[in-house]
Image (tube, rainbow, N blue to C red):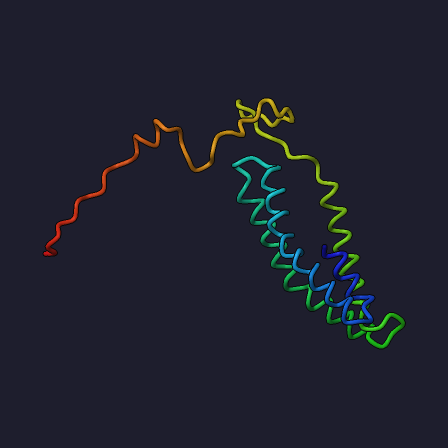
Length: 153
């Protein structure tokens, strides 16, 4: 969606085109959660922190450098052949490159029961919730709540 809405901004000559671009721009908010999810599926539990940290760092770097670089492009091209829309066309191209990069990411690898990394989906235990144990384990950890007296001390 980032490629499409930035392209629309870049070529917009009417309010209707801008309105359509704004509608599609809302989908761009899903980029980081989707990338984060894809990255977390591709690594084991022992590497989750490193991957999420790298994603967060690259997101912060892009948030800092993006406006600076787009402002520079705008200032240099606002009176040029393509006009002020050039920065949106560049942003569209960068989103397109990012999309190609994500499409080249190999399918997620899964950890087998013995801890090896494998591609065989039959060895993946997808039914085990991360934060919940089995019913016998959850009953073992439940403690009754203390009774409170009606008259505070």
